[in-house]
Image 1 (cartoon, rainbow, N blue to C red):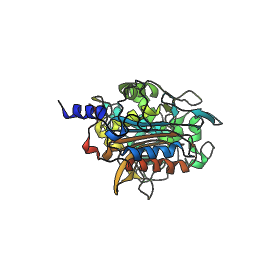
Image 2: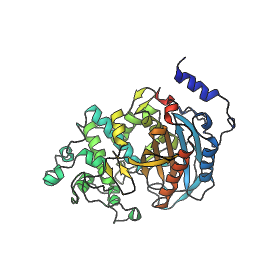
Image 3: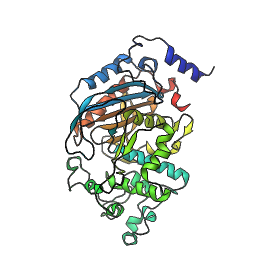
Image 4: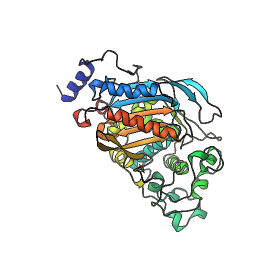
Length: 386
């Protein structure tokens, strides 16, 4: 009998204190997730329970938390809270559960980044070093040595050098460049025609516009719309069936912010990435692309925050050691954190849109969950990768 099979049997059957009623035990809803008790998958179950209980009883408008380790779903929390969709003007109270879709906002950007990696592997995009204007021959009037130096990699790392303002406090106003992405007809020209304020690759400018251009490159090179690509290349291989991609005023999918998913399904994406792009033995995203996406290509600030290929990067303390994480961020507290050294994925959804404080809330939550891990990743395998 293989060591992997023995581990799986031990996780599912071994007795453990409190095993019968684990704290925040995941629901069994037949969506392909293997479920394990925290104490049997390398957690201090009491500490993990305390971390999640602090969220459940806290004042922050957090709607869900999902914890996955070694490919096993180990904890799941849902709350009732105020929420509003991307097109809502006012918030309304919503009781969230395992089958409810949630706005992911800019987590959408990270999904677009994964689709770019698949397109590069398949040869639809020759290289991340390909000049962006080469995909838009109709924009001859925009050509200049500076703009022709902008590559796909620069859009992925938000270092194109094109002027763009997305300050958190200005979202929803005309002072924020993202606002025009909801209604402007010629989006690519809008983005690529912005003034150049830095040499490509030298400065980080957060830009939903860059993601919009990446999505159009995907459409142009595949001749499929973005939701169709996402379904065929990412969601279907993972058994993800319930999702939607909200459109702009013209019905075009908002590549930078329109994705809605169940938190459990977002966690599947995380588990697949922790398995180097594999899910149930199938290579969904190239392993090399996963590695490049989750490593810092450019510094965002002086406090260690960085950016990869449409994924954020940073570090978290684990018992006195700083471990790297990669993450998808979305306005309002939407997060998918990946800590590869612990084989750990943490999903959070929330309704604190345009509120800077939620960033600290979810970072502290990650820290508490990481602190509750009692064994390194090397001491177990990942069943989801088998």
